[in-house]
Image 1 (spheres, one colour):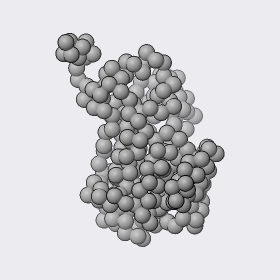
Image 2: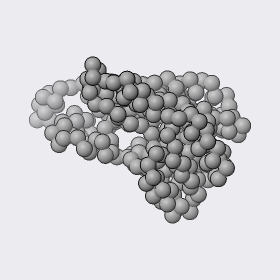
Image 3: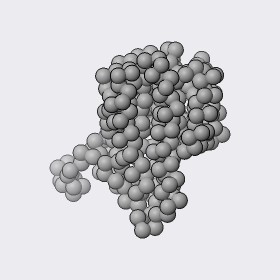
Length: 259
């Protein structure tokens, strides 16, 4: 696969899955516009340039539609209009039971995770329509299907991303634009690694593969969906969770099976 002469836009580009995606796309030949609110996104841009590719950074709150439009326009002026959009940015603003979820935290999570992706798609799709080619990937979560206790805003926002992707796929497939969703399970990000040891061990024990995924494993799937070989994948929802959701056996029965 090659992404030579393609312009990719990646949100949440400073760290984690976003940064891994930036570097993977650059290795395939893409020039990359990196969107994040963190100044350290400049370090990720330097990694792109070290590979001989062009990069631009946009410090943008993607929940702000006007800021997104301005950022996308600035990136296009520097690199060219986007061919690829990877909506990776996501936050967990609140971990608390439903009854203690504040309207402000709810709005914040949906603003970044759901409205932010919509804003980015709305800003980049016109150029893709003009080119007759485009790839959009929304990074959702397995929480979109199963939910996570204490994370109603996160789960709802990630479920909403699936609906956005389906609609974009239906509306713009005829323009040569595909839109797909990647649903990571538990991945070795800062948030997951900050969990108590007992919780991490329990989650890994419940996984058929017995471990967490890596950011590179998610980036590899995203990058495939951004390439020419994935042209007939449209509106797909791809779980990348090591089979965690398939675990229908209790831990006790699994231990017995191993014997």
